[in-house]
Image 1: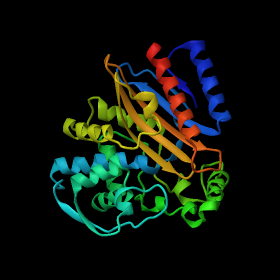
Image 2: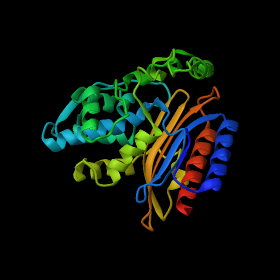
Image 3: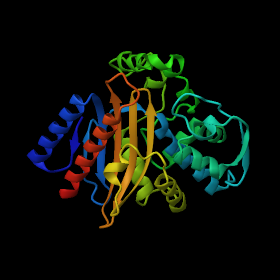
Image 4: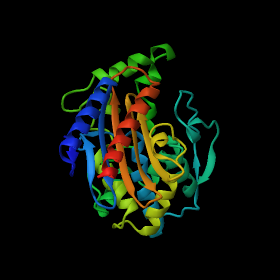
Length: 308
C-alpha cells in the first residue's frame, strides 16, 4: 500500500512514476520517508514486512545499550569471541578472523553496528537473546519488528553452497521459491521464521531514536553516534550525504535483499527518517544499478516531502 499525507495529484503522479522505475529496474521496493518535525510521510508499500537481514543489528544495539544503562551489563567487560574463519565474499570483522579474540562489549557494539560484523552481533545476542530484544522494543512502544534469531545463519544460505560460477542459481532460488503469503523455501527469507520488519516499523524505530521517546536520551545518543559511523556507505549515502547534511544509517543485505535505514539531517534544521527495503528480481549478486535505483527513489520521496 502506498502512503502520503498531502500533495494531491502531484504526489500521486510521483508515486506512479517511482513504482514504474522500480519495476523497470527489476526491484520490488518498500519505502517510507518521514519528516521528523512535521510527521508528514511518503511511501511505497510501507507496511509490507520483509526479512530484516542485518537491519536487526539496530534493535540489538538498542537493547544492549539499554541493559548497559540499567547496570545489567558492563560495556567494559571483555568476552572471548571465537573466529568466524569465513572466506565467502561479504562478511566483515570477526567473521573473517582466524584466531580467538577478547573484545569489550562496547567494542562489539561498534563492530556489529558500524561494520555489520555477524560474529560480534551473535556474541551480543548470547548476552541478550532475541526474545529479550523484542521485549525491550515493546517497553519502548516499538512494535512490528520481529527478532527471532541471531545472525549466524545469514551466512548459511544457498550462496555458500554453490560454486562461485553458480551463485546466480542461489539468487534465482531466492527470487522464485517464495509463496504468496511470504513463506519461502529458504528459511532466511521466510517471514514466518526470519527476523522481519517493514519500512514503517523501522521508521518508527528511527523516530524514537531521533526525537523524544521512552528511550533514554543517553541510549538514543549513543546509538545515533554508532549509526553516524557506519562504514558501509555505498547504497543510499551518495544521495543523502553532503557538506550541508549528515547521514546516519544501517544497511542490510541477504541474497536478493538490499535494505538501508537512516536519518538525514540538513543544516537548515530539517530531518527525515528513511527506510528502503527492497527485493531484487534479477538473479545476480553484484548490482550497483539496484543500489543506485533504490537511492534515487528514496531521495525523490525525500525531495518531494521537503518541497511540501
